[in-house]
Length: 293
Image (cartoon, rainbow, N blue to C red):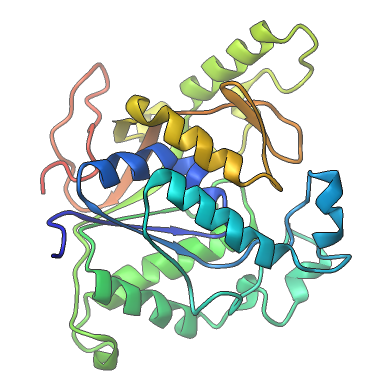
């Protein structure tokens, strides 16, 4: 049976989905919605923070991508998501690395993907799954990673193309996505988390101003606040599954930059396509991605 509510999330690398949307995914799975994750690369260029697995890195055995397939599968099991796919198939496009690195020039780097080919691959998924709601990144890719920016470009093009009856009828019947959200974190929430981390750790020497964080969003741009408090355990377990990339300690985590951040179980979104549903609270934010549908 096809679920009445269907959500598609498009992400660049394994772990992006759980960090940004893990509680959301677990919540909608629990509510019986269809949740599909589409990941565009294997994250081959990630920094390995587990010393005994250092040989997996791109500059050594270059086997990290395969290992991260397993990490992603474990993370999805923790969240309850059974439909997770790689764009074009596992390894079709490669992690492009950070801006200015030699990985940007790899012939399979997603940053260099043919936009028509990548768009068609997303359209095929959209027309098969037929989600009412799509979640992806803003035009800056959150923090400027080339693959995140490319995911934004490809996802937004695909949403438009999927609705066009004249576009690639071989990929299935047209489908009009009702709502598109960009994942975000309000600057006020980031500041609160940073202050809590500094208070909990007397030796903390990281950033203290949330506006220095590239993916901080102005509160006025946020449109949805989704409460995933009941799914803290699932999100934390999902993040812990990405062990080559994340260090977990209580309610905080760090990536390879060792910048401590709070694990957010309330997740935030910015509506950029479709009609905003009814909201509540001091900001009037939606509390459900499917609000109004």
